[in-house]
Amino acid sequence: MKRSFLICALFLGAWGIRPGISHGQTLSPVGSWQVTILGSDKGTAVMTFSNDFTVSGYGITRKQFGLFTLTGNWAFNNKGDVVVAYVQSLDNVGTAFNFTAHLLRSGKFRAKGTDTAHAAFRFKGEQPADIPDLSGAWTSVVHRHGKSLHELYTVTVSTNFPAVFDVTGQGLNDTGSFTLDGAIIATSHNKLNASIDRTFGVDTERSSLFGTFKPARSEMRLSGVDDTHAHLAVKAAQ
Image (tube, rainbow, N blue to C red; front, side):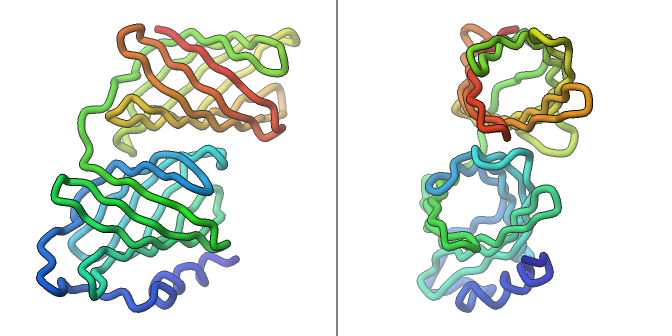
């Protein structure tokens, strides 16, 4: 599906979203939100709602390999809830999403929506709080197909995406050395979603991982799959 068509769908397909506060609506979504994605895919996103009724953001989910970005629009419906329509883009491929969010006075929202293929999603938004600092050097053991990969990571704070950490490094398996790079997005609840690419010579394997950061131990525990359908289990420590 062409991106131009998806952009048009943002304005025509969300059953009449429009700017304006209706029926005494006093809560506004304007600002940045930490969003947990549930349903047909699971992950974490950061969404920023602007006064000009646009929305932008980025995130990582379990079924995609990489950090996606999103752009779209929001408005109030006639019930005072927030209707959002956006295109999520990764590797030059766009997917249209829409959801309707009910804002809570506790600084949270709850939403339900669908994507282009009518897959169902739920979204839990909250005001961002302090996130863990993952920056530094890490040593990791990765279990894959009954074998172990030994990896060294350098993790740095992203200069482009708040709550995201850039990952670079190298590893060693039974056939030789390889390089790796990727990104980790962290939440204020120490939840992690990561996308790591491992390059073996001229071949690159992409992986999607999720797990937790254990601050008392300075440890990350992650699991997931790569694009060869191999399961991965990662234990990393500083």
